[in-house]
Image 1 (cartoon, helix red, strand yellow):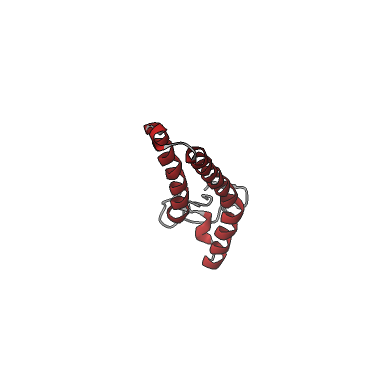
Image 2 (cartoon, rainbow, N blue to C red):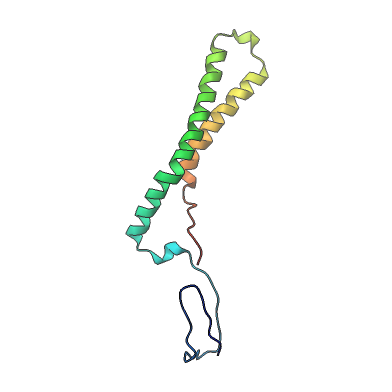
Length: 114
């Protein structure tokens, strides 16, 4: 039998595999953690990595919408064409998607594969 050397461990020559089958697979690092530790790590990661970037994007979307509304508030309704209405809907959709994304999609923290 050959000795397999990895970064942290060795398979000794005296080790005998009774089935003769070698299986290679992977696990996420999170599968090895205790659930309480995992919850704490995800919370910390969300606060340090996710929230700053998402909050910035949300701020930009809200600013664009409020700026658009401020510009359109002084114009008479007959001057409004279809384009400003589409712009308003687009800005509102950006804000809505950003808001919904946090509630529905914050589960993509997949960890490291080992």
